[in-house]
Amino acid sequence: MNFTFIMGTAGSGKSALALALSSRIASSDVSTAIVNLDPGVRWLPYSPDVDIRDYVNYDKLVDQYNLGPNGALVACVDAAVTHVASMRAELEKLSPDYVIVDTPGQMELFAYRDAGTLIASSISEGQFSTIFLADSIFLNRASDFVSLLLLAYSVQSRFMAPQINCVSKVDLLPRSVYEKGILWTTEPEALLDEFVSEKPTLRSEISARTLESLIDLGALGEFIFTSSNTGEGLDDLYAQIQRVHQAGEDR
Ligand SMILES: Nc1nc2c(ncn2[C@@H]2O[C@H](COP(=O)(O)OP(=O)(O)O)[C@@H](O)[C@H]2O)c(=O)[nH]1
Ligand SMILES: [Mg+2]
View 1: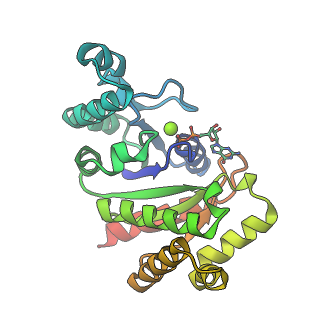
View 2: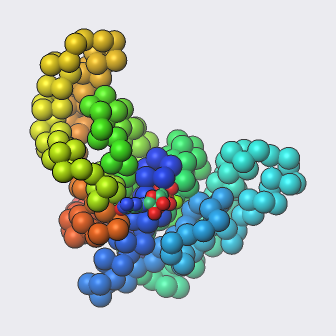
View 3: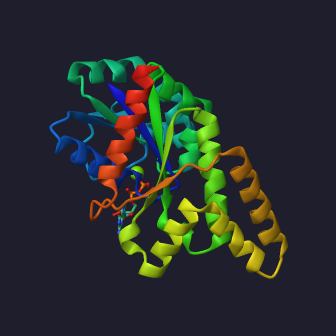
C-alpha cells in the first residue's frame, strides 16, 4: 500500500482531488482506497473506504465538553491517534495499491499538530508521500504566491516526506495568469524579478528575501497544474506519485 496525504489550505480542493486522483489511478486498473480524515465534514464528493467519522464523533464532543467548532476538531484529530491501528486494519482487508488520504479542511489541524505527523507515519508504517495543494487564487499576486511557497515548505519540513506540489482549480485561471504561473513555478528567478521591478515596500522586500532563501536552500520543488474538474495534470500527478513510491522501494 502506497500512502499519499493531500494537504492544503481550506477550500483548496483536497477532497475533490482525492476523488479525481483516485478515479485517474483506477482508470489504469490499479486499485485505490480513499481515507477521510476530516472529522467535521458534512458532505464528501466520494464515499470513503475508511472514515475518521466512524471512530470519533464531532457533534458528541461539542456537546459533551462544551467545545467550540475548532476545539472540537482539534479534540477529534487528537483522539483519532488511538484509532490508527483499526483504520490500518480496515485498509489491510482492502489491500489497495494506493491509499489516498484526504485531510481536514483547515490544514493546521493536521499539518501543524503532532497528531497529524503521528497518524501519517503510523497508518502508513513510515512510508508515505504528501501532496501540497495550492489554490490557484494565490497566483494573482507575486507576494501571495511567495507566502504560499513558504506554506508548502513548512508542510514539507513538518513531514519530511517526498512532497509533490500542485496548483488546484487551474480551469478557473485566465490564460495570462496561467502562463504567468507556469513561468513563476518553472523559473523562480522570474518571480523574483516581479519584486525588483516593483517600487520597494516592506512587503516586497520581505517577499524577495524569503524567495531568495527558498531558492538558495533548493526548497522549491516543481508545481503540477491540476484541475479536478477537467482532469488536467492528473496524468502528471499520478506519474510523479509512482516515481516517488518507486524510489522509496528502491532505497
Ligand atoms: N472550478 C474548480 N472548482 C474546484 C476544483 N476542485 C475543487 N473545486 C471546488 O472548490 C470547493 C472546495 O473544494 P473541496 O474539495 O471541498 O476543498 P477542501 O476543503 O480542500 O477539501 C468546492 O466547491 C469544489 O467544488 C477544480 O479543480 N476546479
Ligand atoms: Mg475537504
